[in-house]
Every structure is written in C-alpha cells, then in structure tokens.
Length: 319
Length: 234
Image (tube, rainbow over all chains, first blue to last red; front, side, top):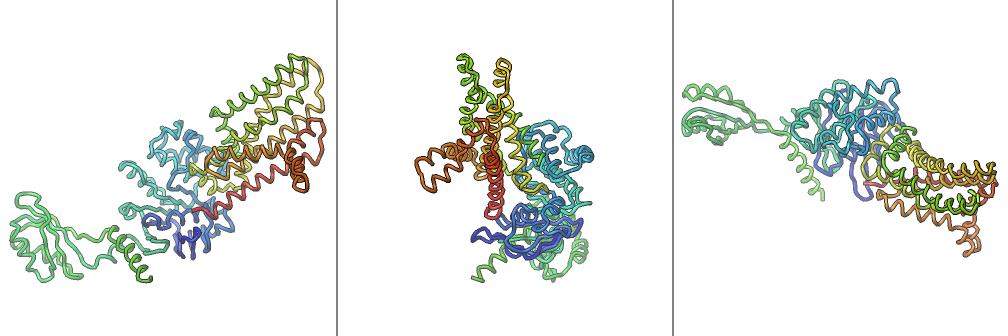
C-alpha cells in the first residue's frame, strides 16, 4: 500500500531523513518509533505531500507523490502532531469545510460526517466552537478531519500526546477500530502504545531505520537472558537457599515483602534454560507454595534504548 | 477553490473585521459626500477618485490574515495535504478577500444612487470610475494575499502590503522625480495614472489588461512563494 524507497531529506546542511526504505502492507498498522528529532514528522510530511523530498520515492496505492500528488492526497488522511484546526469555527462548520476541501460528493457528505462524528465520540459537540473544546476533544476533531473522504491510508503523528489517560484509552480504541479497513502509520514515543496497537514497528533514529519487526520478535531478540518474577510463601532464607542451589540459576534476589511470610523475588537463569517446571516441583517438595511465576521479557523500552544507543555508538565509532 | 472562498468569506462576516471595514469605508465616503451634497456639487466620480487612496489602508487590514494565519496556526498542513491544488487554494483565498471588497463597494452604491435619483442620469464617467475602482481593488487584494504569504506575522504582512500599495500609488510622482528609463517604468506601473483614465470615463483595453494581469501576477507569485517555502522550510 505504501512503499518508501531511498527517501532522503536535507534541510540545508542538516540531513533529517537519510535513505529510508520501508513498506506498509494493506490493512496493517505500522508503529513509527523514534526519539524526538529522529525524522518521524519529516517522513510523514513527505508521505502526505506536505514537504517535497530531496531524493527517493514515495508510492501510495501505486501512485507516486511527486508525479500524482492529487491521487495520493485523496487516499491519505493526515493528523499532524498539531491538529490543523480553525479555532473560530464550530466542529460542524469545520468538518463541512474539510469535506468540501477533500471533494466529498454532496450526497455522501451528510451520512459520512454523522458516521465519523459518532465514531470519534463528538455527537454532543457539533455546535461547539473549536476554540472552546478541551485538548482531548480537539484531538478528536483532528482525527475526524483525517477520516473525512474515507481515505485508505491514515497517517497519525503522535495522536495521543497531551491527552488524559481515559482519552488515551478511547483514542486508541478508535484507532484500533479503524484498522480493519485501513492502512495506518502511527508515530509515537509512547512504547506501550506500540505493543498495544501496532502489528509491526519501524524504529528510526537520526534519520535512519534502526530496527524493523513485529513488537514480539523485537522483544525476544533483545532478551538473551530470561528473568522470572516469583512470589513464594515461606521462609525467605530457605527459599533463597533452595533456589540458589539449583544448577541453572544464575542469581536470585528478594525484591519485596508483600505479607508476613510472602516474599517477591527476581531470578535470572543461565542462557536459554527453562527452569519453571523444575522450580515448581522443587518448591512443592519443600512445602513452599508458588503464588506467582511470571517470566519478564524485555519491554519495548529496553529494545528502544538498546537500538537507539547502539546506533549512537556505531556513529561515534565511524568518526 | 470555492470551498476555501466560502469558508473565508464566512469567516470575515462572522468576525467584526468585515463590518468594521465596511463602516470605516462608508464613513470616509460620507465625509467627502456630505459637504459635496451641501454645496450642491453632485459629482460622485470625483469622490470615488479621492477615496481610492484609502484602499491602501483598508485592504491590507482585510488581507493580512488570509495566508499568514494558516501558517501560524498549522492549518496550512490541512490545505496543502488536501486534494485541492495550491493554485486553487490561493485563488479561493483571493476570491474571498475580493468578495468582501466588492461588498464594501456594493454598499457605496447608495451615494451615486442619491445623485442619480435627484439628477437623473448615470454617466459613463461613473461606470468607468467604478470599474476602475473595482479593478484597483482586485490588484490591491492580490498584493495583500501575496504579502500575507510572505510571513506568519499578520502585522508585518499588513505593513509590507501597505508599502507596496503606497509605492504603486505614488509611482507617477517618483517617475517625475527620477526621469530616464527608470522613470518610464515607474510611469508605466503607476496605478494612479491608470485609475484616473477610468474616472474620465475611458475604458481602454491596455489599462484593463494591466490591472487584470497585475492581479494574476501577484497570485502567481503567491503560489511560487508557498511552493518555495515547502522546499526550504524545516
């Protein structure tokens, strides 16, 4: 659906995007991750045709953005980081204007608008002035704007920034709901958001792609050692000794005490050994019931920091 | 194109700006018209000729926000990523300012109407003067749209357009002072000289073409400015 080849963007001497290549398949939600200033917004601005690229091509649904900008723009709904709202208009006036701007046929306009308003949760705000809406509701108007014209591709630049937790959950739900029929690129630096919504992740750093995979596979690629979180009932010292004596345990440490004789521990095993079964029988033998046993794999945070600092180190070595 | 124009026109009439400008302009004409009427001197052409100068102050206020505001508030992204092409957006914006200008002109029809009712005839001078006035307004609106594209600061946009319009207005005086080939150029671009021809009731083709092509040129430059900024901005 979206194909980006050798994309480069210079701002004078500064290289904002340095030879990026990636593809987004139809119906996929792609998470676009990167620290601030990595080139996420620039890339999105190029895909949507707001900025021209220095070199390289962007194709959306088979149309090139430089040779067929209008065909591409018809297929894309864009929510920039700062929602492009006219604050002196009411929600309805604004959405009507965007429909006209996107050349939605008159007979379809009314139904489409009421569907979108329902979907993003704005039915009670139709006649409110955008200037008087809270940030969360403005974000919804921004999202509604992107949905007008029923575009096949949605590009959302940090759609949940600045929202309260309840609004974040709702916006995420809306975005997930949209994904069934659309291709979505979503940029963010909130990592749990990516693992929650996205099927695939592209991590970009300093204008280059640092990693690209599914959130799960990225996680497992980073965790070479597996950690286990345990909650065990029983005397602390005996537990520590029993487990510490097991052959494949690298170390164990108590992290907290939750009740009188219930303690939480973290344990690290030697490379790629699964000791969960063995652990269970051993503790059962000694009448020390396991209340919780949870493997902790690397979070996206770990991967992110790993990937981002890796490329940082490489660059320093290049110099 | 019309979506943009409609939205902007509605914006002008929802805010006080259109009404204030209509009010100010009507007041200015009245200040000329009342003494003339009292003196029994019913020549509106002369009045229109004089009030043309005040467009230099009114039009920059009308046009200063038209593109500068979009840039400042980030709505430019919406316009430029929509399937409506840039020339159509710019023309739509121009049409909006021109429509508000026309509504100001429309209200001023009351004055010649008073004269026509009491004196009888619509003269060719009057028709010519109005046509010239409207064409002058079109060029000034286009200059205003152009300067509004240069900056995101509305005040700066207004000041630049005021300077441009004032220079065009005074061009014949510069021409007289300068002389030589540069003086000839100034003579040629003097909107005042050309406007005076209209108020004499002469509709000459070269003057009409001059005003229309100047309008087109300013809009073309506006498009180029926005295109260029897309390439260089960060």
